[in-house]
Amino acid sequence: MCVKTHISPHGSGIHRSMGKKWSFNYEERAAAARAAHQEIGRTFARLENRNDENDPATIAWKAAIARFRDALRLAYPGDFGEDLERLKAGDARGLEGVIRFLEADPMFFGSGYAKADLIRFINRMALTEHQAKRLRAVALAIVERRASQEFRRYCRLAAKVNHPGLREELRSRAAHGDPAVARRARWMLAYVESPPCARRAGR
Image (cartoon, rainbow, N blue to C red; front, side, top):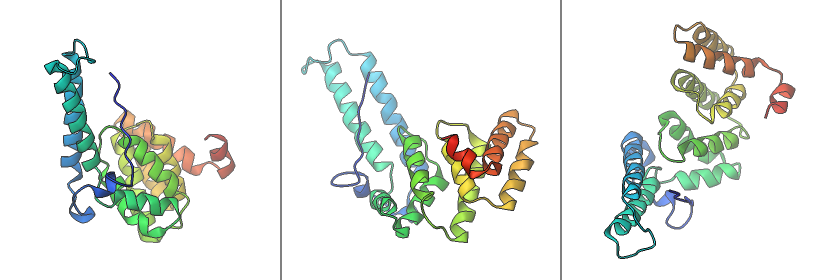
């Protein structure tokens, strides 16, 4: 099964999804996107000939794909696409929306790639101390939660917002009773404390 879904910040893309950023229910929308993605798998398992347009199983599968694309579009806040374009252009007005997205940390198909891209653009920006403080909390939250594919990006984010308090929190977590949390904290701390030339070499 292969489903190719491209989310564009233009036209009918993510910036037209409903809901204001400040009242957006990230988890509810993410759960809907996950459920829609699972439904594609269930309908695909019942396929006999996906090229048979009249087969009810094919019809159900294609309908599931359409519902998934809608759910995926709606998993992003209304102005997400606009914020992303601003960030790409170096416009600080895009920061608030994308920081909120990282703070919420919704999990659904493609969200990890989106977060990795957001961090890449954030790392090019000048940040206020308030923004840096929020992003330090984002980095620590990931240490607590998981070592996903984009974890290295979060380490780069931590280096961007490096602060004695962040390093102290990471050292505390490195002594954590949960071995997975401790391991992630050591990884991030090592990255934060490494010289910039070593970070660039490790990309």
